[in-house]
Amino acid sequence: MKAKEVPQDDANMMRGKWKDPIYTVDENGKYTTSYSLGWEVKNAVMQQAWDNIREKLEEIRKKVLAGELSPIAYYMEKNIMDVSLLAKYMELWKWTVKKHLKPKHFNRLSQETLEKYADIFNITTDELKDLEKIKNEKLPE
Image 1 (cartoon, rainbow, N blue to C red):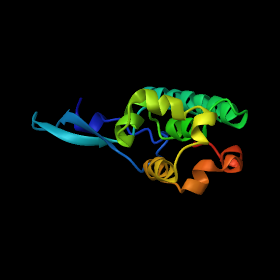
Image 2 (tube, rainbow, N blue to C red):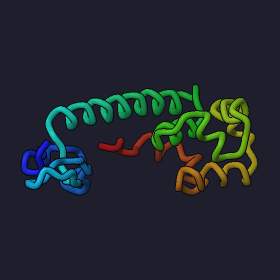
Image 3 (cartoon, rainbow, N blue to C red):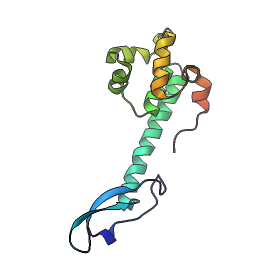
Image 4 (tube, helix red, strand yellow):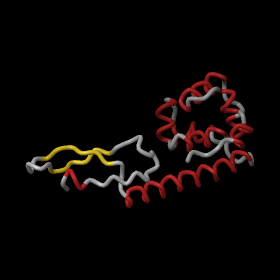
């Protein structure tokens, strides 16, 4: 693609805050880097991916509020993490993190463990335990 032909469809979710580097050919036929705000196809795919993330986050929020999952599940999903990744950050076995996703085990966690989870999610322990905050929180756009 020639540098002058790089799409600049600023309908992406970042609204001009992020530009993708793309290898292009300049007027001398040499490879160079150009930047694109996005293009229609990529923007549609990204929007669909974020819609799926929001949908899954809403499902998990409902389960947390219904007492089927612990708040850890909500914040794990909100931070686009899975059990394996969270277990690595927590320096715990995956089965231990899975156990903490159950409300009865979450309610027995030590303050130290809660603080470690909260630090990973970049929230306070009070926020981690606050179901009202989860209930009223606006989902990411």
